[in-house]
Image 1 (cartoon, rainbow, N blue to C red):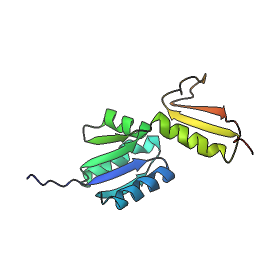
Image 2 (cartoon, rainbow, N blue to C red):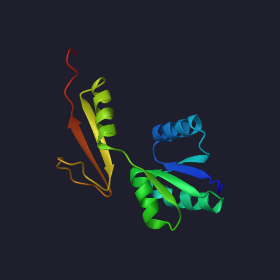
Image 3 (cartoon, rainbow, N blue to C red):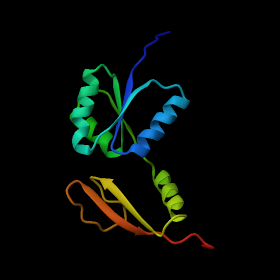
Length: 133
């Protein structure tokens, strides 16, 4: 049996997502060497530095992962969000407020008429209050 170990790092612009990924990796015994917070502008140099330090694979969420895959000739795994995970987050947010903002890197959410500014589009969504509130 071939036994190969790899070292992984996660690059994200979200401290909340980074914490969740780190916790999930620890709970499942995955070899996540490092978690680095970086803006979209910083993500590429940060990833290059991690590869130079010996990391074998970089994990990146959504837009960060796509950016790194496009510009690096190194192993990058993109952690995507599903429509269901976004819907679940919106339903949870509805318990706290009727006004929710959604941002997307280099894309406009389906059904929204937004004008992207630079590489990011931001749209406000009206979320109906939870019945009984």
